[in-house]
Each structure stands twice: as structure tokens, then as C-alpha cells.
Amino acid sequence: MKSSDHKRVLAIMGSPRRSGNTDILVDEILKGAEEAGAQTEKVVLGDLDVGPCRACYACRPGGVCVLSDDMQGLLEKMKASDVWVFGTPVYWWGPSAQLKAFVDRWFSQAGDEEHMQLFRNRRVILAVPMGDADPKTGRHVIGMFKDSLDYVGAELFASVLAPGAYDKGDVRSNGDAMKQAREAGAEAVA
Ligand SMILES: Cc1cc2nc3c(=O)[nH]c(=O)nc-3n(C[C@H](O)[C@H](O)[C@H](O)COP(=O)(O)O)c2cc1C
Image 1 (cartoon, protein in one colour):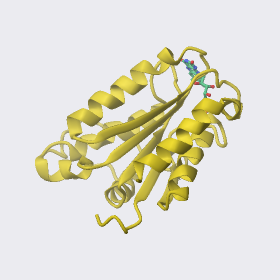
Image 2 (tube, rainbow, N blue to C red):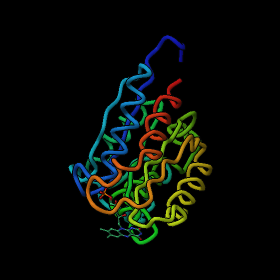
Image 3 (cartoon, protein in one colour):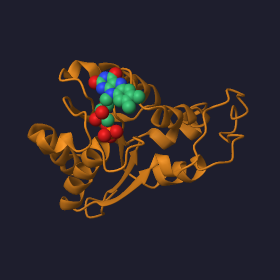
Image 4 (cartoon, rainbow, N blue to C red):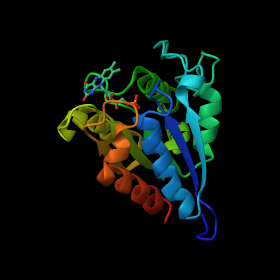
């Protein structure tokens, strides 16, 4: 990509709570990216039909999933963007079911080198609020993404953790997390 081109950022918002802490953090990351000149798009997973992987392995080889739902469109959007922002609240020390179902569906693209190209040279920013005041509560979410992204060859560029965010909107009073989110968005598209 020429440095004069606008980078494209795709955000996948994986909390079922609209205008909640994940949504706010994701928006802040996108704001930072837009201020740095990027084009952004946010997809709310809860608006889409992305079913869980059936483990039929019909996608191996060939990369085509037997499920016909909104995942195909999401893969197209992923292909067309340089930076991916994934947002999820911590649910029972893990990601939301919605975001996990989406990640499981990457399986169709992870079977051979041709389809693995989807993940190459992508930067990922994670946005992870949690009720607990201890950010270590987010470690399994970060660890899952770190290992999964290493496996497919994408880069975990930044993780924005927001502890102590329980009620809708709490994250706004976490100045550090909001600042980190804005900066991560800008830096990822630099
Ligand atoms: C099903 C469920 C499970 C949760 N599990 C945890 C947890 O394990 N640790 C934690 O710190 N917070 C937990 N929380 C609190 C959420 O992480 C917190 O409210 C977060 O800010 C929600 O983000 P949202 O506003 O984007 O929905 C849980 C909330 C729900 C609804």
C-alpha cells in the first residue's frame, strides 16, 4: 500500500449491549484512526447472523463454509481492510459468545496457505472492558487472541483493557483506557 492511500479500518463490535463499554471503546479507537486519516467501518455482530462452526470440516480444502449466513460478507469486509478492531466484554474470563463464534468461523480460512492470506499483514486492536478492577481478568481474552493471531500470521498491534467498567458507560470515566484507545487507533494506521 502506498503511504498516500487511506488505510481502512474494520471494527467488529462483539458486545450485545448497544452503546455499552465495548461500543464506546471501539468508537474511540475508530475516532483516533479517522483523525489520522483512515476510513473506518463498524459492524455490530449482534445485528448479524453468524452461526457457530459445525465442525463438519467441509471447508477443508476449498475455504467454503457450508453455513450460509453473514460470515461470507464479513470475510469480504475483512479482506478489504488493513486494520481490524475486535471488541468484546470479558464474559466469564473469556470473550462474548458472539465474538467467539465469529473467531471460530475463521477456521474455513485457516486450512491452506491461499486462504490464510486473509490474515497476513493485518493489524489487530482489541478493545476489552470488564467489570473487575483488576486488568488481569482480561488475560485469557488477550491470550486467546495473541495465540490465535500468531497462528494465522496476523499482528496483535494493541490491546486496550478497561477494568472497572461494569455499568453501561462506565468506561468513559477511565481516562487512561479512553486515551489508549484513541492513540491505538491513530498509531495502527500510521
Ligand atoms: C454474561 C456476563 C459475564 C460477565 N463476566 C465477567 C467476568 O468474568 N469478569 C468481569 O470482570 N466482568 C464480567 N462481566 C461484566 C462485563 O464484562 C462488563 O459489564 C462490561 O463492561 C460489559 O461490556 P458492555 O457494556 O460492552 O456490554 C460479565 C457480564 C456478563 C453480562
